[in-house]
Image (cartoon, rainbow, N blue to C red):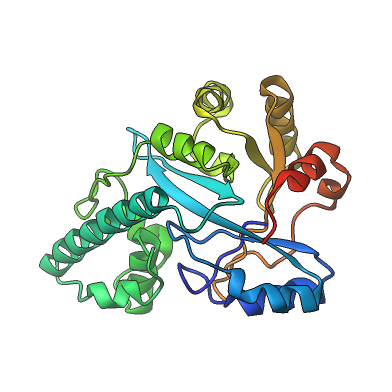
Length: 274
């Protein structure tokens, strides 16, 4: 679960993911491209042939007031819903406007990068794509250097991002029977004392799960999230966040302990399979 394709910032097609999943004996995948909803039912024949079930999904982006980026996964969606497409279109339009302003500010400081250079990384490319381009062209020595000098909040080329409110995103996904889940919770940038009340608020909006089993999580982080799931009656989910080819996680690389989590299995059984 939680996979990306060339429709956002991944390097694989849906058939690539189905084939890769079958090769490592994974029998269910969810395609969750960033702020992009698409009909993947055309690949049902291949998924049947490979014995890999397909779940339609999305990963929506939002920002907190402090600038922290939050991603909400929606599993089992109706790809034809116009209201979801409207939210995705709004998020993407805001990101494109932000990217254009970052380009303008970088160019004014002698850094030759274009919008086309950034969008080559995918339709949902953002500050990380800028940082990679700056490293590749020798303007900075590392990704961290790019953020510290130009792209982080408070720097000369940081541009605030207008996003669709989290509450609106979660409530819409719930109305669509879409099973909203908080992706990689520890990437939100909140400490242990802030995380629980934040997730509790999301639960009141309709959040159904937390991505507990995630490659970057330590045992301690996983245990914290499992405890929150128990307290708030949320489903623990798993995801590799596979992008393929970007130095990120490989398909099927989540913790094996996820396979023994009954709550996760119950959640998976509730999803609409294409």
